[in-house]
Image 1 (tube, helix red, strand yellow):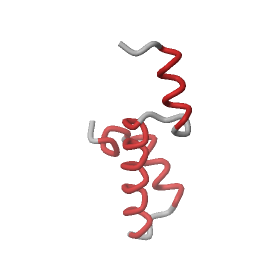
Image 2 (image 1 turned 120 degrees about the vertical axis):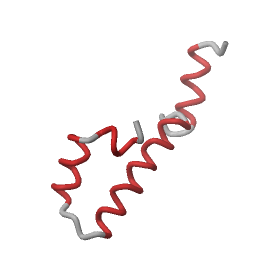
Image 3 (image 1 turned 90 degrees about the vertical axis):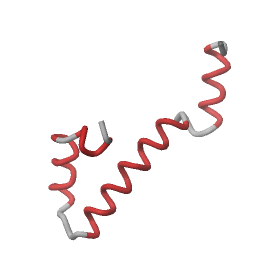
Image 4 (image 1 turned 180 degrees about the vertical axis):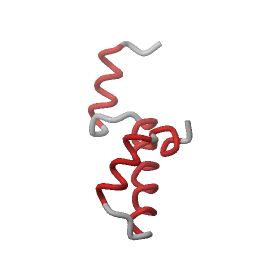
Length: 59
């Protein structure tokens, strides 16, 4: 098991996010981009994201 201090250094060297979290955020960006391409309003996309988190993340 990696010592916690070593893990913090690894994460910090890559901008503060783990690979898993970066992948998660990229998926969210792609879903939002698809919605923008469909001319959905920014406020509607944000509200849907807050209300339907599982739909956005595949959970």
